[in-house]
Image (cartoon, rainbow, N blue to C red; front, top):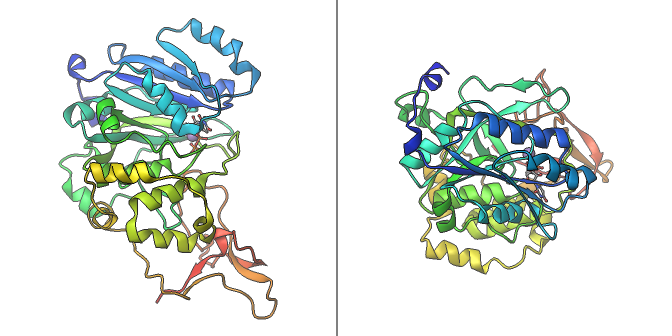
Length: 382
Ligand code: UDP
Ligand code: MN
């Protein structure tokens, strides 16, 4: 936006940052594009260092070849974990080496646009309790075409299965703005790309280190930021592209377990909505959460009810009357259940036409019943 381009910054008054990039078995090209784009777009006075954290990758090019390559780059460090830590602990290991005032986390398949860093740092310099995300543009995973999200940015939400969702800015938020280039409050973050004051991140309890591999940590941090007195924002002047691959280069078996930890610690009675839509989650051994509950008490964090009313008031809270949700089973062929055809090519996770084809037909069919299939869970509403 022209307003973003014409904005001037007092570099010496902005906090400095360390960019932390954890990776596991990432492709050479995308990893290198990420590193170079950070180096090329970040003013030298603001960027203390880039900290790469190799989460015990086994691809050979990520060993000596990567070390040799980055040894020619200034301000790029490579840390290696001794065991597979998962993205939460890998990022935290990186953070322990950070010398900047602000921690900026990026995924290992990003491309920063010029001017991406200054708005994030300026915002945190002005309010230390703000956790700020860039606008995430989509990089096509096949062609690497960059799709700039030029209109009003989307903000983060979730559905009651606790999957992250994008949605448009509600009217009450737009009414609050004085200009188009103000940070936009967002109920949740996508997870991979954000900046936070190092001090404030530590005060907030960094991450839940009981979370493994991938998933759930973004909602956990989002709930915690809001419930414990901070704010989560997207800065419309900061643009970073992200490759949404069709398939990650690793298995992700821990989503439910991690998400159950988040629900147990932060969602109070509302966690039932999550469990009703994810019956197997009730059986997840999510481990010890006592420290996280103590943290919530220590920081005197607000309830999830407060969060819903004050931060995400446009989210529909379902009634969940017992017996009014679950599988819809055929009375003729009792092994078949009503199944929703999820659109599979949906890079942003945006649910544009839930339950409908583009022509407006309900996109459902009968399939073999599968108690673990989220596409077979239905709810009666009137
Ligand atoms: N990651 C990691 N260890 C893991 C899983 C993921 O370091 O066990 C890294 C991954 O390489 C990426 C970031 O964490 O830089 C987020 O993962 P990913 O991009 O696969 O998540 P998505 O963007 O698809 O949600
Ligand atoms: Mn990613």
